[in-house]
Image 1 (cartoon, rainbow, N blue to C red):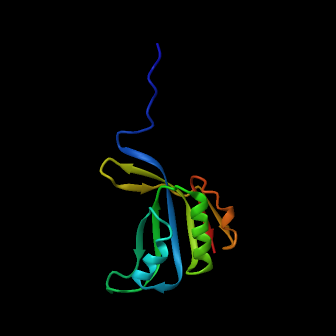
Image 2 (image 1 turned 135 degrees about the horizontal axis):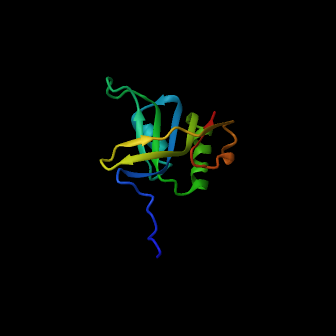
Image 3 (image 1 turned 90 degrees about the vertical axis):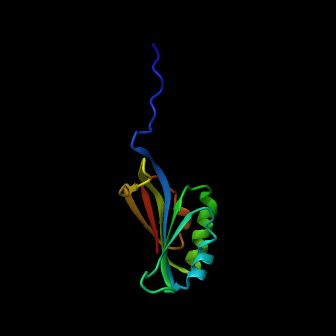
Length: 134
């Protein structure tokens, strides 16, 4: 008797890999300017890191998350940021576990790879590998 295929989905939710990208700006930017710079990477959720106790405080860094659609287009965006507004970029496909209530737990990175800022082409978007471009 043939058994039906087993699902990788668990009762507690889903798991997988999403792009996790941190941009540290060379100089803190006004909120509108930071969003304009980050708009080049379309389709990601953007979290700006700025002081919450100071409305209008400049934004020193940001985090973008979501599915990786076009690696070559994203490499071009990373290269442009590193030639302009970004001091460092950390990027990779980060493992996650998402509960049925929507709570996301990020899995630790398997490996870190540090590259010079000029070597964006070497970013391979391997699952569980974080690339640090500085």
